[in-house]
Image (cartoon, rainbow, N blue to C red):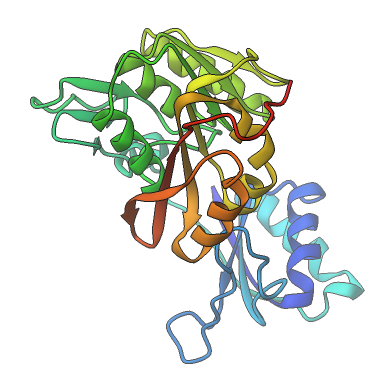
Length: 303
């Protein structure tokens, strides 16, 4: 395997990346700030659910991997021959040592403690001796491995409030980790919904691997109301979903929302006020977990 290293301005990052991937047979392309660790370093990406402040770094480094040296050489020769790429510069073309990429990837993921006795453990790790409840979950295409604060806070709430919930809805289920967590803590019927087919497939596979039953939906869900509704998404979608999610919570049931920054609390509380009162139940690394209990039927339930 060989790596091609190029430098380009912000306006050329996208066309160069597209050419490398779509026309020149690169296996992968990554982009870095050429000014990293200097006074000119730029924080390009904004906060979650906010647009990036720019299309690219003013000075960018592109790293493209190719199957062999001949392919990398042919790619850079063709690319630099284009008039539109005259400002692109070749920085290096070098061999990449063979490595066990599977083992390197697995080394990044270790067991995650939710509580002292509840853990999320990748399949290639032994569960800690103290673990009484374990979610076996490997990184995949869908969001939710237990490493992010929002996921940990949701699972922690489930563990601390475990009961035989008659019906649970995991809305925007991702990997299905919250649905599985609810199943391990007493939930009887669990519905999981996501618009992403990869998430639905991941939830089905992960539920089977953990020997729990979860009904999955890509359109609609089981209908009716739920004793517990879980949604770990982002603040803006959660605001828009307030009429839907608020009406899905049964009287006496709980709504648990995550993916929310502390500064977004007031907006969420206002959006869900017709159905229930949201309060901050947990905080971690700037994120908050919001929980509310529906105590009456002030708003007409949606069909």
